[in-house]
Amino acid sequence: NPFWMGIIAVSGVTWLFIDHVNTGYVQGIRRVSGLVATCLVVDLYYGLIRAVGDGSHRELSRCHEVAADYVLDRILSYGGIYTKMGQIASSLHHVLPLEWVIPMKTCLDHAYTMQQTETILCLVRAPEYGGLGTDPAVYFDDFDYIPIKSASLAQVHVARSHRTGEKYAVKVQYRNIPAMMNIDLRALYYVTKVVGYSTGVDLTWIHEYFKQTLEQEVDFIKEGQNCTWFRETFKDWDDVAAPEVVWDCTSSGVLTMKYAEGFNIDSKKGYAEGGVDAQKVLERVAEVMGKMVFDEKFLHADPHPANILVEAKGDGKWRINWLDHGLYQRLTPEFIDAYAALWTGVATSDPAITEAACSTLNIPNQTLAAALLSSSPTVPTTSTALDVLDTLGAIPSQMVPVLKCNTLISSLQTELNVPDVYNTTMARRAVDHYNNQQIEIAKATGDNAEVRRATTDARRRLVKLGVHVDPEPQGSKWFSLW
Image 1 (tube, rainbow, N blue to C red):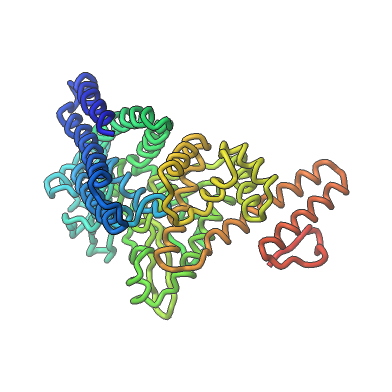
Image 2: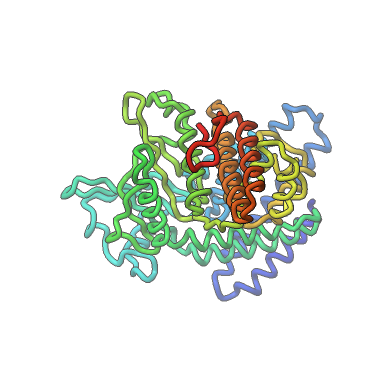
């Protein structure tokens, strides 16, 4: 609405002038006014098309393309938090038209890049300011100042050591990221407040989500620790890996790792040239996600196609290399129980279990719950999209990154034309968790009849999933499944 966008422009610029007069306020005005101008231009463009266009699908598709290209240009110009938004949009195939989703994939690894002089300054500054405190030549014989990837907060360079023969990936954080992040978050909060007021939907949760996640992602020491945890957790999985961190060349703003090979997990060309079965890869990804959610309760919360590489090793063999471990989410046992119950109710068509889980997780109805879990590739109406946004603000914050992972895998299955292996895997893990929980609750009562009832219900749920169950329990187990 141009009226509301006008209010945002006038009051937002005034607010930033007062609040940032001594801390980069010129850049603050430039960035927030750019955000407002972008919203206003896109809104006016769609309004014009509705007013004078013929309403055809072809015309609307062209309108989406023009608007998405314009927004992408602004995102690449400003970088930072706006790039992060573009990355999220690239996976929202079930919310946004494909004309928006496809261009936003550029944000995954081809965003803003620093000039060589800026990169050197970031590397040589003192460790307490995020640098290495010395010239990179001290650590590496060769350092390529042209980045191979660039994203929202940092860019990646290739370095080599002739003495060890190793090839390294050096992730260098952009200059002034903390200051720009603060400005962008303030602008985002103000915009979500006003737009939320005009739509009647509270959108301030978007600001809180970005605030919490960005605070984690700017600390590369923490990212290195998360990466090491992932390596240790999956050390016995031959086809799953993460880069080894080189701690001597790592600081809060520079992360050095051994180089990981592979193509982006959404690359059809990569699968064809490497002779890799995409379905088997996605099945393994689903198993990794299931282990992190239900076993470890510690989830890689920022997966996107450029962060998951598939390394073809010949003869149909492959390995999945997981990158970018800056953002993780700790999951509480209470949330896991409710999430498993939600999956169980939806997967086994049990409205009583689904309703109870929806109540615990603040999801308004069962239909929306099923849509959130499955991330079905449909483009909803505006009212449905607003319902989803409203629900995302009400559910536990732990659930947002979990749903983000669901969305990514659903998007990959659609793009690669792979059967739904993710929902099948997660449903089985969830039902297994829920069954074990119910049996343990029954055992705690000391009532054998309750235990038998819980066991029977558990076996019935497994059968509903199409899982073969032995006709009689074996040994000390209450049920077994293959």
